Structures are given as structure tokens and as C-alpha cells.
Image (cartoon, rainbow, N blue to C red; front, side):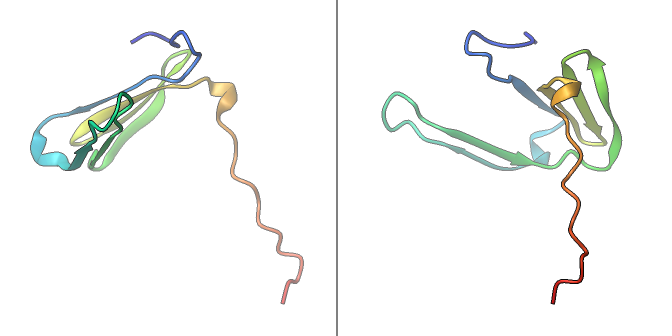
Length: 86
């Protein structure tokens, strides 16, 4: 998998052990830029870490998701303000 493409967009791949783990696949061929939506389950989390400097791998019992992402781009979620709002 390439780290980035010509547009510096993030590439990803989803590898499932079986199409039984694919819960929904929608494609659109209207016009030149038809979209694709893939939804499935990776199963129980086995690990999530950077396998290369810019490849995050999330492995589950049913498959693997790889995302081209830099560690510096991963941020902590914003903390909720518990300052006594009513």
C-alpha cells in the first residue's frame, strides 16, 4: 500500500476473512464519480498499532483495516467541560 497518493489523500484497505462479515455494500455508477460504501465488522479487537510509520492497522477476529495515517495526525478527543453547566 502506498503511503499517500498524488492528491496526498489517505488510502485504506479492508480485508475480511469472509464475505459473511460484510454487512452492507452500496455502489453508485451515476456519473463519473460513483461512490462506494462498505460496512462490515472486524470482530473483536486483537490489536491496533502502527505497522509502518504511516500505516495504522486495526486487526479484529474477522478481518483487518489498514489506514494511511500519520501518528502525528491522531489526536486525543476534546475533554468535556464539567464546569457546572445546568
